[in-house]
Amino acid sequence: MSAARPLALLRAIAVTATLPLLLTACGYGSESTDDGNHSKVAADAEKLSVDEVRLGYFPNLTHANALVGIEEGLLQKELGGTRIKSATFNAGPSEIEALNAGSIDIGWIGPSPSINGFTKSRGKNLRIIGGSASGGVKLVVNPDRIKSEDDLQGKRIATPQLGNTQDVAFLNWIAEKGWKVDAQSGKGDVSVVRTDNKVAPDAFTSGSIDGAWVPEPTASKLVAEGAEVLLDEADLWPDKKFVITNIIVSQKFLEEHPDVVEAVLRGSVKTNDWIRADPDKAKESANKALEELSGKALPKDVLDPAWESITFLDDPLAATLDSQAKHAVKAGLLDQPALDGIYDLAPLNKVLKAEGKDEVDDAGLGVER
Image: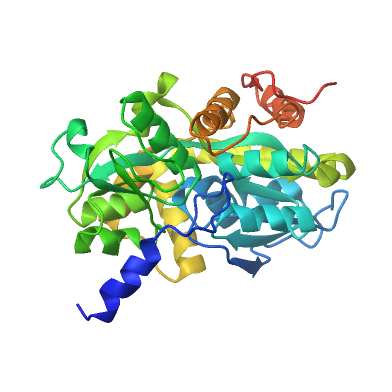
């Protein structure tokens, strides 16, 4: 390894003093890419109340509901002649900015940027309208240095970003173990090293970190480099379920085009049915979409375990989002948020009822009707 590479690596994993004390995204940066129109529209297909709906999501397996729904034409089928235009994002803040600017109408995004976007706008910019995925987060470690949870003391463990969903979860877990860590600096009984997911595999192989609390597929990429899974975050939650991705919409778009919102939700529900009916085919479809978007498919030794740890579901698991917000407050990374009205699940419940499925609950955080 050249002398320049370790220096660049250390710079990449350093915690900067200018990071805002806010919940941010679990992602790989702030860039977005306009992917144009992905789905073919039949010439005689009837349009809904708008010619085009703009969808935003991450090129990530935890966003496979969007990846597969677009790849297989399941979302477009429900939209008829209303064309899909999609854009991919590498971090939640940029997707929230796009939603606020009207560049996208509906997005797939994690809980932390949803909470942050809602609270920063004082509840005026978005609603969570559906679930998408649960799980897919693991604590993976160097087995030569860490044999048990107690061995984490004094070690360097990476999280993707200060205040992001995984960072908050790890800080909360540390606190429940009785260990002390300063949330802002990451210093304490365990060193929390905020490390971009793109950098984490190199940081692990170079020995700069001893492990990481990260989402898929980063966790499985580290395992492929020799790490071992010490803990699956799902084991810490009731029924082993917690929100990792939900669906949001701009409040303006929801008010003006409820038929389009309902069609997207119907497509999402049918996509999840399709995924559950043939998970192997769905996994390959998601990987094909990732290859089209990034130019590189995930190798089998990463794809298979990563896919296995993610559950695709329609329920937004509202109670777990509320718990995640409380964990961030407890860590000192967020003032007590006012989350009343963050959910509007009426359109989703209408779709679920029509499909003969159970309705879902907003944990008391829904809009008043």
